[in-house]
Image (cartoon, rainbow, N blue to C red; front, top):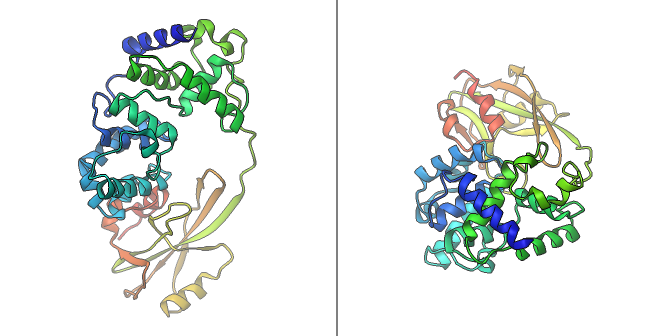
Length: 344
């Protein structure tokens, strides 16, 4: 069954799979690595534009390594999961400094780089170095869990162990690239989460989930938890120098990006203005709230606009940014969208 599964999948990929993605048809490890990082938890259609813009600005590893974190984050703005961008930058510098700018060809060595786990390292090895390695991203987990009838939430240790064993067992002796790409393509198309097209699937004839009517149950979902709600005030301080921004800590949401100063929703904004800018009777204006969802909680931002007549001195990590420069700055997407609506 295993050899039949791989044969059918390889044939399907070669005849009906994806062959024109921007990161395909290359053996360049830098481009493959970049695409794999961007594709983590992000749809292909979303990644395409970011990938092409990123390569235009950073066409090779050396140029990326020499860039500042702000330059990297600016091009990542809107793609989300910003730790990926910081790790990408750190990994580029590490490869240049420790490996003379050449990516390690070993999966285990690649896994030592920031932001690269087992599946990502394996994908780089397959596509760039023709190595025999098994991958297990979200789409592949779904394909293998359904076809092999693997029970349990794939993120839990025992089901994950079973899926890795299945992924390794089914590796073909040849056509590794077509097989690996086929798993990705099948999971992204016919074997989708909610509406799988089993009648058109090349491996449905011996798929456990299809035969037993379990396509909606497999892979099993994680038990959902109610997300906590947080509310913050974000202060839009405008002056002749632009808008006041603060650099966020590297850890946490929007890590390393520039954003608006945030406060608990119970603070006295007029008191804040007196303390920070030494002025009283500051005209403040509340704007429409912003709702934004993260993995672990929901955030409501309450924007309050304050306009200063003079430029106030600010200390690191804060700065004034001209509103005309907002579009190209490394800002969180909802903050950038908000600031682009303001008048200078």
